[in-house]
Length: 147
Image 1 (cartoon, rainbow, N blue to C red):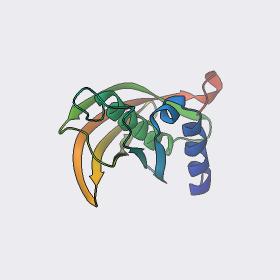
Image 2: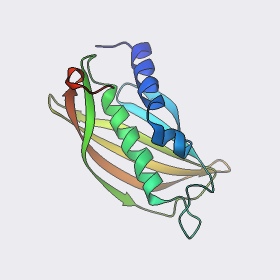
Image 3: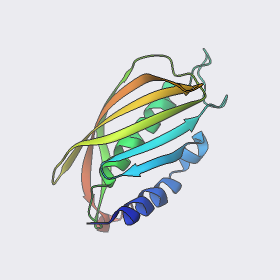
Image 4: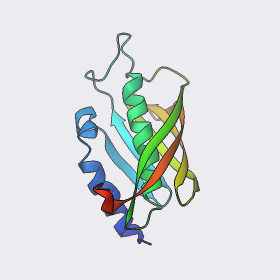
């Protein structure tokens, strides 16, 4: 198994290669074994027609937080791919930033089940705007996939 420093470096290195995260302006806020936080600052480039952060951006950071949470519990020779997710949008996504927190619920040999929450933060207040459950498939890194 990887130690905490190696896990952090692995997650941040992989995240840096996700061009969608750069496009959205998202950043890794925290990496812990079985849990990852991604922060997405407000930007008028990611809004829908009512000036809320678009559900696609909410789902993207939620999925990635869950995927990276799953990757934190993988051995060096394994990675993960999302096979399905269900997201509930609980409230309009508006605020200074969104924070997606992904957590591993159960890690098996072939599948990792995760749960994620997305919160809108503004002026020190925090409101949950989405809930996601996601299933990650374990894949060998030798299959041409990178972390």
